[in-house]
Amino acid sequence: MAIMYYPFQSILEKDGKRLFYPRAKVIANVGTDQIAREVAAYSSLTTGDVKNTIDNLVTVIGQHLRSSESVTLDGLGSFRMVMKSTGKGVETAKEVSAAQCTLYVRFMPSYTRNPDGSVSTRSMVTGVKCVPYKPKATEDDGSGGNGDGGGSNGDNNGNNPGGGQGEIDDNPLG
Image (cartoon, rainbow, N blue to C red; front, side, top):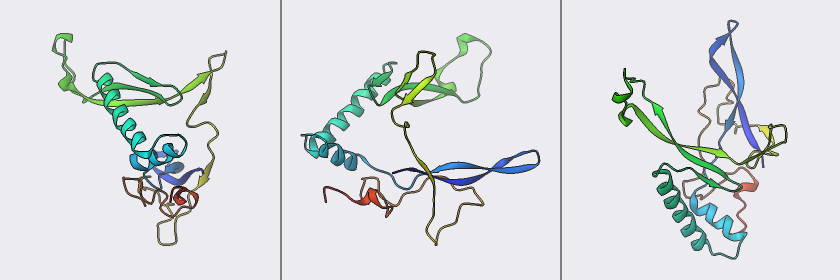
């Protein structure tokens, strides 16, 4: 398994040139049902037990976030609410209101720090291998570059999760 990337051409010019940069290519979306099946395969729980636990986890995390609390799941990361200004500033602190922003949930993967303070690992990105995305002959090669990096050959329920990309669609559970 590896992270796939494709060349993306920036719309901004640097020294009179539009340069290319790597952009991650999402080849499929794995839904809750597929995650539940895979977690169940690693445990003594049934797929239904895992799905119920995931559903309840989402509910409980949402309750804490709506109470202005951050949530940290060991080995996964932290969730917190952030406010992004809509650009409608006011002249006094007394005039500030929540109507001036949009709320978002921010996620930060788990990490550890070395004694010198530098980041040592992030659990979900440590050891990741990156490989160039090689589209099928019928797709654009991405070299002109303004693909969205999204897309899915599977559905939101995790069916056909790999979309024909090799080992991902080999479901050990049948």
